[in-house]
Image (cartoon, rainbow, N blue to C red; front, top):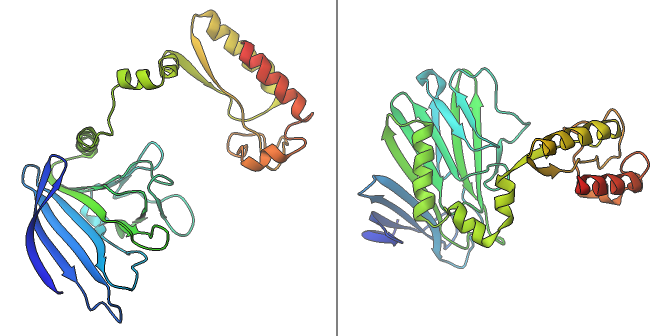
Length: 293
């Protein structure tokens, strides 16, 4: 450790007060790392930031900054932004879905940069402010622990920019409170826009809001007549329809694969000569018919 100094870090309208720590003599390298630990006195939000400041050697990534875990015997639950959201209670008898490594990049596996742990009245809400190269590994091991582990991967082979977490430790907060915290964060960061603002930029959004999203999840020629009749019925009731055209499998169609879970619409499906029974012609006809409906 080379030096520690107090500092005020300004991020927009926010002012954080804390410490800047320079770390060197890291192994056999000449790397100098800068760590910032600072508090927003208005919200008690803790900012943690890491960056390479000097040295001819290169920091490629950072592992476990930080890993938060709790014993399941402490009760509570874990909040993960997977799909529409996971709330994993301490007594959940199953591990998280998926095989092997349980991690993923925010923006790929994780749909939002916000994660949470609740243990009794003690709560932790974590927002990854620089989320685009942030990989988060989540674990739930029944009868042992739940954990959230943050890894920072390189950008074009190096750390390249500051990596930042915002942590909020509260008493009695729950997943609704954390959602409101993220809403406030998004608002002050300029991420939140009203529908009126979105209409101005993308007028078609208004049509989407007024419409029913009708999903035909997987191509099955036996369903065509039923689908068209249902759409006609909804239109006859005065509803606008936003139609989700069916997927087809990149392995080709067969009754065994004609379900929503296997009709993956992978890009290779465009290369198939016969993506569905009868080839491309019935697909083109179906598209025209649905467009007219």
